[in-house]
Length: 180
Image (tube, rainbow, N blue to C red; front, side):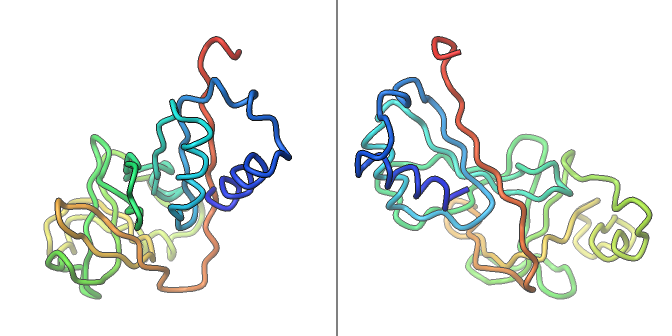
């Protein structure tokens, strides 16, 4: 999660953590809340061989559905593009796709979509949609409750929540084989 990433970068910069222990870090995958550029940049300076990825998704869509490989100089880090076998769209209140640059609800679809909520038909019908009532003909999709927009190059940007739901957080470091 970005707040943990910021704490790690802070401790490393201030000598409160052992930099040597991170020499084998090759991949840093961050998700669960909006990511800020400064902690990523600071950690990238400390661990220059690491690749950083912003991962977006929900539990209902097997966690990671959209990703963005963070590039040096990314100042406003987007959510990115759908991973293979998934898709995303930004829609209005009637689930019609919005043009690029317009704010709306983020929906996710494809092979990543779960079946629904166990023993909760009402929530399942509200959040999981299928083709019959789908004016977009998008197939089965999940209504995330997140606001976003699609910008240039079909990149998804996160703009906030439609409600006050607290999202689960994901933070992972992948170490090289030599560190195991």
